[in-house]
Length: 96
Image (cartoon, rainbow, N blue to C red; front, side, top):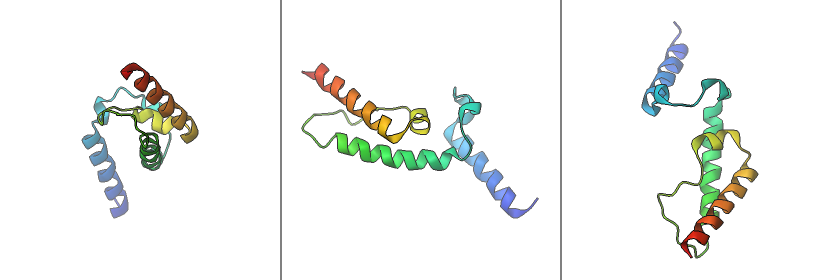
């Protein structure tokens, strides 16, 4: 087996093992090819959106998650922004 294939196979195994993919309830058929790159890119965008959304005076719990990881893969960034804003609005209404 060529070296490159062994490296990719090992990387895929390590990622799957570390992430606990075998324990996941996500249907593998719903995960598009090359989604890891997309996931990382969207995660960076999500962090930027979350930072933008938290730049006001609203006190938010740092452990609060606005989205699930599957949302980051399957949802457009503009829709993610709407979801974050809406969840933040609802959260601030509950606190008042």
